[in-house]
Length: 369
Image (cartoon, rainbow, N blue to C red; front, side, top):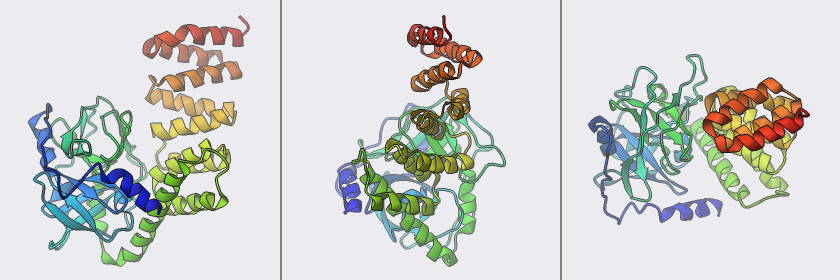
């Protein structure tokens, strides 16, 4: 029933069979706008998402989109409906290759992958509201994983993206592929580096079918359980807790680790929350979303000393977040850390000056004048 509920909530957003395709206006460079022709809408039994064509008959999207479904439906920018099959692989990035019905083989590598760390990025994805591919407003900040980072570490950027854009292309201003969007909430977007597409292609093999299906089922069951959890504010049933713990862990998906950690934090189950968020941070130590989630969990659990370095790491990446700044002021006061307080006040003066008088008043009271 949960899968049906997830599907019905998104079905109205994209009718692959009936509505006409209308290209959205594009104000970006021509090389960026051209990617709209390579974007498809994807419909599975559970969700609506995006995909990016990397070769004729082949689309890359997120592993968490395909779940354990044997077939998905795609709709390209010209309105053509095609069925595609997810190809099994054993590379741990949140990516999967979809092969269109009637097509054979597998491409050797992804095209036009960028070499470098450009900061100006665009998300090009299937927009559910417009029922068409869309080039979103560019971002001017991107944080890239270290060279020795886990394959599940992400690029983090303020390039605009919305729910349902997962699987869309992320490109630089010259139209080179930087990555595949994994998640976006209109603030910080997470992107799987495009270099991993070739690794996925090279590890694609029918020999991985069994494990691939097993992980896909865990992704689906975890997502279903997290969906159910959104309606529960307290006292969740033990069965739901067990499903989240076992299936989200088995999903091997960093994004689901985050969501499980956030869910347990909302239920004030702080040990479980910290365990999942720490798994995520181990894979991606620079993730702003995970750092902020961990800071909130520690804040609610009054683990002030542990919260301070997490907030410090977060603010080094995103110093304009007003919630993080308020939490940091409180932490500085509780710990009597004047140097930290002064640093946070300086960030406030730059990014949130309206909050400075109240913050200064709190710090003065905390330090006795």
